Image (cartoon, rainbow, N blue to C red; front, side, top):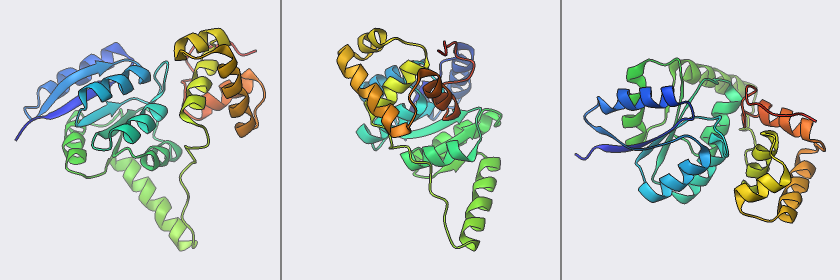
Length: 226
């Protein structure tokens, strides 16, 4: 049986190197690439077509939410495992709705990641035990109440609007955003206005707070709130 080809997407170098060292000790898992931002992850995924991607959420240029959405749409056979410090139900349900097949919190045991890679490669959905137990509890409660909780709507913004939102929240000016996305400033302004209308948020500070609350950027990212 051929090894499970795996791509690691994590912006913290020490964590990324640790994950690589951990997974390279597994004879049936082959690391074929590493990335430190969401946009590079999408590009490399399309080039290498890995079996599995281990994906962080908060990464520069493009976060794991948008990267997951684009990769699932382009590469349906590639399985994505989210590895994050966030264990909130909203994060988990959002990623499952987007098509991720695994969600592990970073406090999970080292062996659990390798097992999750094998599991999603076989078509299973793999969650950290604490996450799985909590989601099961909420599902049972919802059914008892006669309704199922809907996953947080991750499609309210287009892919381009989500990219613009992240760059705005990271403190990028319209020209910087235009250069980063290789589009015109006028187009950036159009996307910015559209996402403001959809979110009913009409200032940069509000967009930044929304991006932090939604996990698009981390609160530790250095941004200027006007």
